[in-house]
Length: 204
Image (tube, helix red, strand yellow):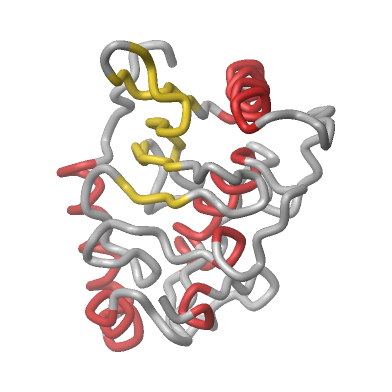
C-alpha cells in the first residue's frame, strides 16, 4: 500500500471548483477529531488484552460520538482482537443520517503496530479501496502507540467528508469527484441509501 495514497490533509480542504458547498463545509460537529487527545489512562505495562478491553470500555462510555465496538464472536469464546465497529457519517448535507459499519483487526503487538480497518459494505470514496480497506495515514506510516481506536474512528469519520484526491485508493471515485462533483455526490448518496442508511446495532 502506497503510504502517500493514504495521506490525510486535514488542513487542506478541497477547492470550491472541485466540490460543492455541501461537502466543502463538512465538519464533525460531535467534536470528534483524529488528532484529539483521548486520555484513557493506559499504562505501558498493559498487556494487549488489557489494552483492548480498556479501549472497548472507553468507547462504551463515549456515547456522545454514537460509536460502537463489539468483539466478534468466535467459538468457543469471543475474539477480542477482531471488532465490529460503527460510526455515524460526517454531519453535512451529503452524509447526514448515514451510519457506517467497519471491521477492525488488532495485531498481536498492538498498540505498537496499527489495526487494520475495512468497511463491512462498499463505500464510494477516493480513499477506500475496492476491497473496502480504509486508506488513512494514522493506521499506516503515521501510526504511533499513543493513538487508539477512538483516534482511528474519528479519523475515518472526518476522512469521509474530506477526501484526499492527490493519490487515491479508488481512482474511479477520485476521477468522478474531479470531473463531475455533482455526479460524485449523487453516487455517494446512492451508496449511502443502499448500504449505510442506518446502524446495524440496536444499542444506539
